[in-house]
Amino acid sequence: MRFRPEQHLRRQSDIRAVREQGRRLDCRAFTLWWTLRKTPAGVEAASPEPVATSLRALGAAAPRVCVIASTAAVGNAVRRNRAKRRLREIFRHQQHLVPAGCDLLLIARAAATDRPLPELAQKFSEACRQIGSAAKPASSL
Image 1 (tube, rainbow, N blue to C red):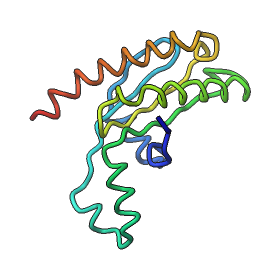
Image 2 (cartoon, rainbow, N blue to C red):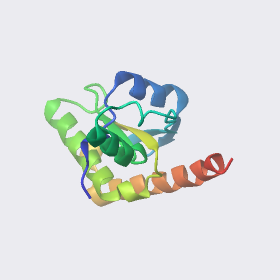
Image 3 (cartoon, one colour):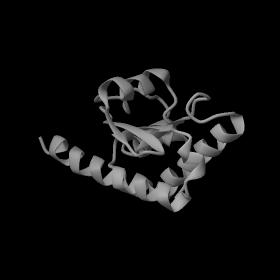
């Protein structure tokens, strides 16, 4: 599956909302913060372009992700970029496990560059199962 542009969590306010209102899962090689996105009613209707409306409608339920790797936690630029690349690739392959309308913040640690990719993928899938089980009771209300 592709990692589409509307799946990137880019705005500082959105990233801050995930950190402040979301829940955290420790996966050893990375920390995963998550929250369910609240979409205001009428956001789609406010856009004058039908193309933008259709793209927004497609991306409204898609999970969004932001990957962060700091110098203090991961190391130099080469290690930071490698950690981010690996975490983005794991999300790309396993995004079907993330509940719809979920915003994720993946914060890399030094182990994200050293651990084997299948091990990181397993940790991510376990975290997604925990998110799915925690998100279902909230969405059924």
